[in-house]
Amino acid sequence: MSEQKKGVFLAIGAYLMWGIIPLYWKQLQHVGSVEILVGRVIWSFVFTVLFVLLIRQYKQMIVDIKMLWKNKKQFILLFVASVFVSLNWGIFIWAVNNGHLLQTSLGYYINPLISVLFGMIFFKEKISRATAVAVTIAAIGVGYQAVLGGTIPWVSLALALTFAFYGVIKKQIPLDATRGLAIETLFVLPIAVSIYIYLMNTSEIAFMHVDWKTNLLLMGGGIVTALPLVLFAKSAQKIPLYLMGFIQFLAPTISLMLGIFLYKEPFTLTEFITFLCIWLAVFIFSASKVLEARKNHATYNKEHEVKV
Image (cartoon, rainbow, N blue to C red; front, side, top):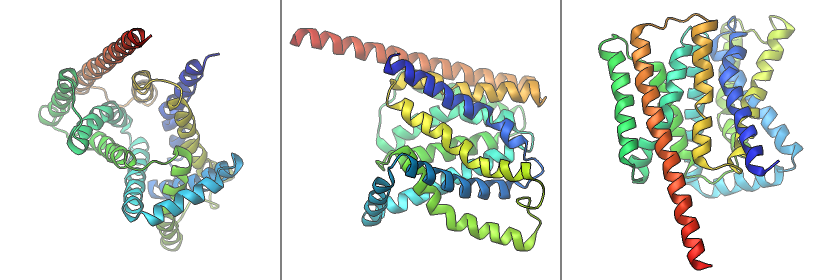
């Protein structure tokens, strides 16, 4: 099997896990969203560090931490990134367990488009006409739901914006994905532990107080967070970005299907038109990236033939 095929399977595995992860969090509906979130941070740190030790990259992680400590700007940036990704996790968990799975799907559909927009704003990256059209159509879809539907999809926007800001910051910090997650969760670990202690003293918590299944599910939150990220990191080294761009829409599509057919969330004409705009935007965006990749590949081959 070629390396690219391996990369495709790894990427599909990662996005399949991200797509079906709502099924996992739904098993914890009897647990408060805050407890699930702080548990996710704590156990993500535990299992990611164990994985780093398993693959014998602990020395590199120590080097990473020392590098960050010397570079105060990157240290602060990574801390801010860890806050953004924690907010993203928290919003997602709350949304899934409060009947807003369709909004999470919408959020992850529009996330790549917002990331492109942020690339233009923060890194002065040029965007093609097709991408500009795609972003405009997506904005029309969201605007339609806000104005005519009477509801602002704040969950979708919050998920897309927090993850886009996370991406902007991470782009400036050269860190391995697995070791990076361990360090990010280390940054917010004191906050998570403090909140957990507060919850223990002020309200009933589920961990060690309900049943063994709940305990295992809360602990397993660390694994279901770390594993798809590891698969994604491995796949990103083996396949081109345009191919990854196609595969990434697998996750919100699965979530959309789960929301409509399994959990029977309302899917009115307003939601349909909003999603229709987003699907059109995604199609234009993806098609333009494929054409761009083919054009670059053809140019490279032509230049290579000339040199030969």
